[in-house]
Image (cartoon, rainbow, N blue to C red):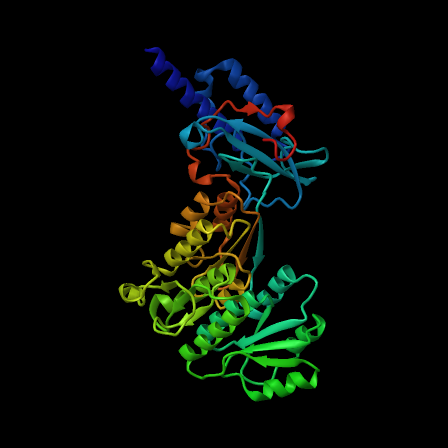
Length: 446
């Protein structure tokens, strides 16, 4: 027998023996497993063949059977880590770290005193215990709830003025989101009627004395209601025609901030579906949104959104097309443009395609990415992996189509460089493991 064949045979037998010992995962059997492992080391592969059993679920580089944490969150306490080779593509060193819980009925592992292993996290890059890019999850389909949280983030000291737009018209809403950002005020999306108690509470608690109404379908009754609360009302754009309305808003913004490029969307197809991503880009860039390629505008350039408007590029001087085969691709292209213009390096926002909170998320002013319902894959995932440098926080909105734990796990990895897409191998591979050096045991040093 050649040395290579003999080594391969020993590896297989040791792996089977490791599976047998790993299959007994309770604290009570832990010392018994240690004893059996010592016998295996002494007895060698001949004895290993006699006691090999199928293994429980394990990961490459793991000799025990503690489960993998569903996400990278550990709400208890972190222990130390160990390292394994051969478990990551490209020869990278894999890190496996213990999440520990007080008196949890499992092995002690590398946990602090009084705690035992609850689950493990693994990475092919950064220390998997440290998430430098925090993930704020707004698991709701209520636009008002999302808008409220974003107002708190963007205007922590409150605001003397606020924009009010039409909650029933996504195109008008997109125009308003961009305009409110340019003016520098928060926004609420109101129904076509009297404001309810929740909206009035917003106005009174943040100290609003001036309301900018951006919605020609919002009735005059709204003006009278606001005046009763001592709020001065200003209307920008009153023509019921959407295109004309957007032109009026763009002209008003030009008087305030000077000529700007414009972002054009239309009322059908991918252009309409991409309105929230376009609004997020426009809000971050300080560009007005216009509805229709032929809408009168001020400024040298125009971004035509979606395949519906793309054919007009040849007719419009200074036009650039922002399109793609899906809403997710168009959103990625907007995020790439924001990066190229030196914006969007701090925050990123994500929503499921078609989410009712997408426009509310757009008011964050960060690039807005779109994911397929329940998943994190495709161009959205690839863009985040390639553009995570400089990110400090991510916002994930929406309940319908929200990501489950497996997708959250992948998203956290993409944001923080844990690179789970490089994981490979099966239970028993990557052994023996490497003890974590003392200097790398503090969180963030692995």
